[in-house]
Amino acid sequence: RVWSAIFSRLPTAPLEVGNKGIDWQWTIGSNTTDPDCPGARRFAYVSGFAPAYAPCPQPEPVEEESGGWRDWFGIGKKEEEAPREQAPPQETP
Image 1 (tube, rainbow, N blue to C red):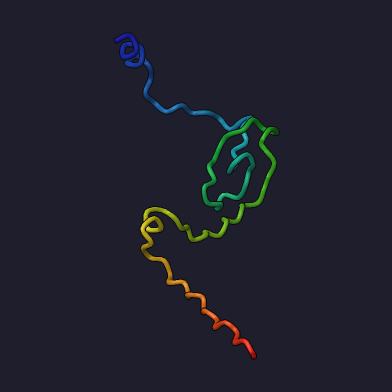
Image 2: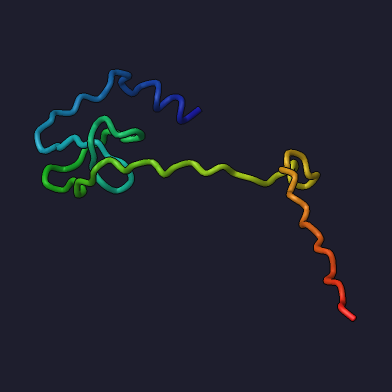
């Protein structure tokens, strides 16, 4: 009840902040990057204190995962070629 009373009296208009002293940068990880970089988000930094720039990281190629219940039961396994048995050498008298 206390919280609802406090918050009911607060203004509901969005906070408007001037851009003086603020440097808006696109960030991914701990570096600033290009705006079209997938996963980049825009953050405000104090002017002169934005992290270093790094080019957009290239995504790692996705490797096919194996494992899981299909491997437990041998489903989907490629038939391995059976090793060919060699005939024992014939002894000469």
